[in-house]
Amino acid sequence: MKAFVVLTLLASLAACAQEGGWSNGPPTTPDYFPIAVWLQQARNAPRYKAAGINLYIGLWQGPTEEQLRELEKVDMPVICDQNAVGLAYKGKVIVGWMHGDEPDNAQPITDAAGKTSGWGPCIPPARIVADYERMKQADPTRPVLLNLGQGVANDAWYGRGNGAKQSDYLTYVQGGDIVSFDVYPVAGIEKPDGENYLWMVAQGTQRLRQWSEGKRRIWNVIECTRIGSDHRATPGQVKAEVWMALVHGATGIVYFCHAWKPRFNEWALLDDPEMLPAVTAINQQVHDLAPVLNSPTVADGVTVTSDPAEVPVAAMVKRLDGKTYVFAVGMKNGPTRAKFQVRGLPAGAKAEVIGENRTVTLTDGAFEDAFEAYGVHLYCID
Image (cartoon, rainbow, N blue to C red; front, side, top):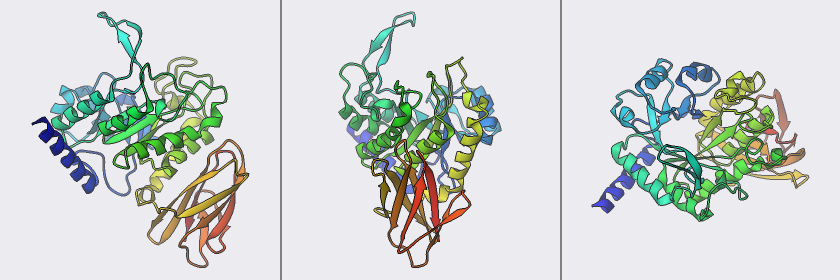
């Protein structure tokens, strides 16, 4: 009987994937691209919405009826825990369910009084799959999100606990319809030169796509504050992390907005006069390009060479409405010059550099451009 239930759930999941979504899940229109914030108070939803955020993930000790009413006022969808309040909810603001955060990390050991007395192993991946099946049984109309920790991308991470191994992720990824991960190279990997490790964002994205065999939607959680560090990524580095994720196949972006230094601030992004407008601009550009990002990626659509070769440039090709798009990002902390050879272009094609008020010249489908450290250039070829 249990095997029959599991097969039925998998068949339902496959049907949802073919239809492009879930009946009570996030929007599936071509102009919608999920850009979320992690675990924020519902009362701040209007300010986040003004910054281009269109999704909440997590509600502290919720969902509660009050939190859901607050989000309904500003039409802010949420992915949250599946509790009694959520399951009884009849509105449209809940668009997904979620596991507890980072089950692949070592878990705190607590006594009967709730006091932490150390760290135990990570949650077994088989338990995550079982919890996923339980949530899908309770409500198959919404996707389930699983967020994993930096072990996805950071092979030096020691925080997974005894007995954890990379092969665990092959099972973990079966425990969610949307699988995300968080690695914060500048503020969170405990390296004094974390700005040299932004490539971990891309590495983790590629690994999740590989481990899930392309059968799950992959999202990235991106740093934009100090978190618990003395260091904070610059607006340019945050933009690079976002586009590293997108170029390597992410279909959703989540911002982690907390900071513990110099004091705890849950909505530190909203109080940052430099980062907030920068993130707002990044989000607006992603929303403007949503139909393109949601279109199929052209396999082997471009070949990129860089000089110096030690500073590679990653690129992705999309085609929509007769136009070819090349989205490119520098992958190392240094300047470089890249040459792009784009396949399938007609003679006389011209490339506009989106948002930069300039064009580049193509010859036989090839063009060159300069990249500063972690530079991002987005090309529209007509």
